[in-house]
Length: 138
Length: 129
Image (cartoon, rainbow over all chains, first blue to last red):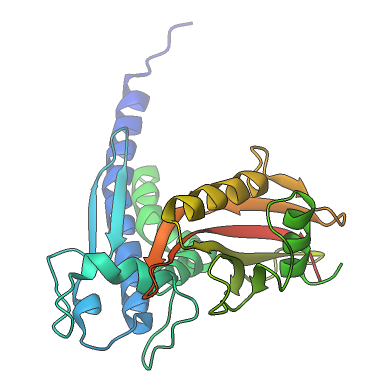
């Protein structure tokens, strides 16, 4: 029996390429949603900590995309104390006994965990699903 | 089962890692004295999993000491006791736990009195209190 897998192979390659691009969209959407929620929870006094929020999406070493998100980038300095945000962001995040008039500790961890538990599958389906769907219809 | 936080303190006491609840170990608050303390805080947990016999909770464990190196060393000892490679842990009172460290011990802060706090966070799936 002689079988030609070249067409099947091409379809696989195309599907992988489309899924890869969709993964970037899904990862970016996840970052946006997490940071949006995080910025609602971050303690605010001068606003320096909130202003230092960031996320970045880049190619993972092996495949797909990976994201980094957090606070303390951009050289933000607290105007009241003169202390760079990167030096106190961890304390604000981890000190569970500190009282904040606005916001709370765990302002990044909680949104990430909440997203992972409740919203991750929906985001993947929304962004990666159509790519697979279109490939199946071709 | 009693309170999870108390169960952990009693487990660590049985291992000789802390002196005991209310002596050098505290739950959900950090006293001003003594200087050298172990504290467990509970923060937001997770929705009930599919099998609600067990629940998933989030804990922060921290060690404060006048000596930064002692705080770090003590924190690492506690971390090692509570982070078995296979995740499963039976506490000294028989409580079953599955423990997921969220990171290794790190420096949280140095307070105005010069005391250093090291800590780590864990997710823990366990029986209800």
